[in-house]
Image (cartoon, helix red, strand yellow):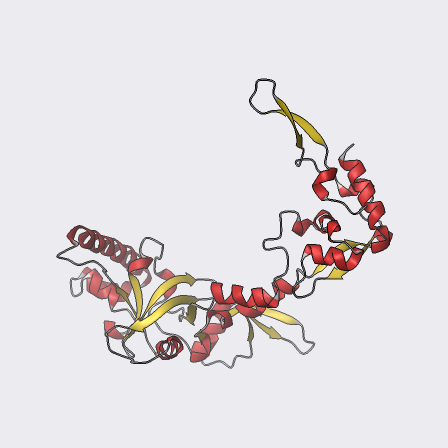
Length: 345
């Protein structure tokens, strides 16, 4: 009973203009609960591993000799009932395109989760987790590497992984790094020992005075927010602001941020750690907290943890969608008849 799916739906009379002009429409809101006709009957079902490039209609063609039973896949698999988006496994080509689009314009580095005091404000290392970030301020904030003379835009900070995600690395001075590729700039930037935050006002103070002044006001607002967190988190050194030795702005923009090791920075975000783990003598996986892993690195403790990258995580999730339930080929006609009988009852 291979047939057009919606042609088997019941119809209803609908008064379009509210004046008695009824037309016959297909009632596509109608559903049939598959448990009504013994969805768990083992003899009816088996499993199919979706191959690279498969579509619901091609799977139907392969299993049943016609593409018209594609709908049975959506009926049987809850994950597909909302549609194909994010539910059907991507082909290898589409998967790589998705990774490139969602990850490859970004880089990532781990920011040490410590606030180290020093007599010289220039040497103080800060914890990025206490820096307030949101979409209001991010367009004007840059992470700068004084060592390399490079700047990067900040996409977001992942507090779970202590990772700062950046993009668009470029020289702070025009003419620097001639002929350098994007990857060259990323690698140079991530090789730095220390970073600072800068506020970039993109407006001209003479020709765009209103916008320029608004941006400066926003900067002052952000500095106040940052200083408020440090006032309690860095009491001993914040006294330099309290006693007037430093302005809030000087205090905030002189803070240093550092990566614990080059092994914890990634030119391509696809390769960044998504989850750290260790395995015991029986190969049992134990997931590790990123904070514990990084603090051990900072403390000089030997670490044997490995990580699952974002690429591997996406690959595992995509492969996890490949196993779907299907009607056995010898049962598909009976399944179809029963389904549409229930649908129209």
